[in-house]
Length: 549
Image (cartoon, rainbow, N blue to C red; front, side):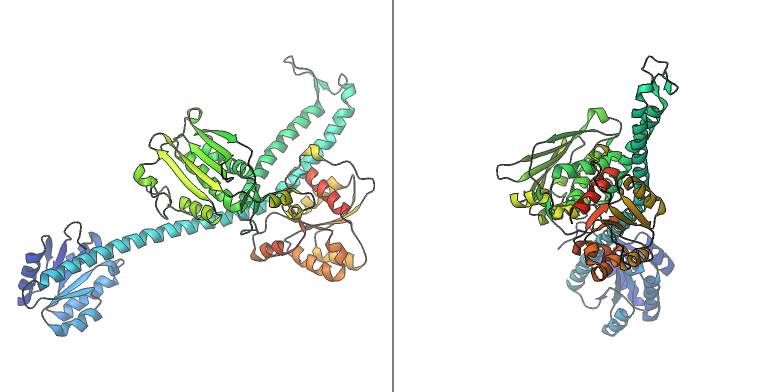
């Protein structure tokens, strides 16, 4: 293998008679040679400008070995290629012991030294390229590790947000219901003391209806936060390797919510969703792919021209029955030489510092593992289209996932909205609430009290004592993670002391992110309600538990 261009050699020559012969030898075979007799200057050069080869005159072994040791002791010194030059075979052991990279026996003539120097230069060039590639890989892996740490931190922050957000949403829902009821009762007296004119030609409205409007605005804001937290949570669910029927359109919508901070100043989002069957996939992994493609599409478009650019998301079926998902943008496009490499690990067409080159490689790995295909079309200045072909879920699996009372009922519920409130039950049921967050406990009790009799405790041990003493409940709402006794331990203890009560348990959780909680939720057949939840979802699930006697 030849070098693309001549590699410079810096020679540190000594004062012995052989030194002149060494210099003449190297100059005869290498076109680009630097020579110095100053060890300090040589050390500065090899650590700064880093010539591919530092040749050291070994005619004075003691001083040469000491210099080699100084080089290796410096930060970055281990990367310097040190070539020792000697005329004595007996120096070779000392040369290697001193840490030199290679040696050249200068005695004799012919083509031997030339060939040897050529090999040395090629080896030095290869070593330098390998070190550079390794350094880049390490830097990217460190960056990837930091990104993973940020993801873990985000999941933890989302978990901490869920408790306060849950009682905010639950209390706002309760306030909306009560004020709405009062407003309807006062609707006949709108011309009385409650009436207030807007002064702008609009019909008069009551103070109650104005407060109701403010609460509904606050509820909408809380709902937006809930969607963000839910979308963050989807990337750290316990069922990390679980596959099943997934609606790609719903996952695309969730990813748009998450990426809106990147999109809103760059492009409009256009949805062209045809009816498609669910795909057989792992939802968090599929979301990871969609989010990466959507963010890439946004970042390919400059800021400030949102009305002139668009990101189109489309779904359809091909002739073979596969589900086709496309993410198209009107951005800068990808050069042909880059397009052929975009799925390679650590390759990025972005400017330095703007990407690790891992995103599309991970997307390719995920889609391939799902039995699908990902491909890209692009023209510079004309935008890009990323196309995914995903296997459709079997019809029996898709029906099973949607069937009432199927195993799907144990997965996190989506909010049903205030209009989804079920009619009041004919008979009040006993509901036990176990949660160490008092504000959330009060909010849950306040939501359930009009229809059910509630008992609240902050301790799973206290709840277990009540049940051991003979108390029985029609539904048990239990936080998964608590400091005194976890919901997992409570659930296990019920199997021994009151197995019929175990079937009454609904776990409340802001996200399972410990290994034990992930494994537990995969193993048990208990209902799960993700925080934050709204009143409609809570009441509906309690009714479901009560009805499942």
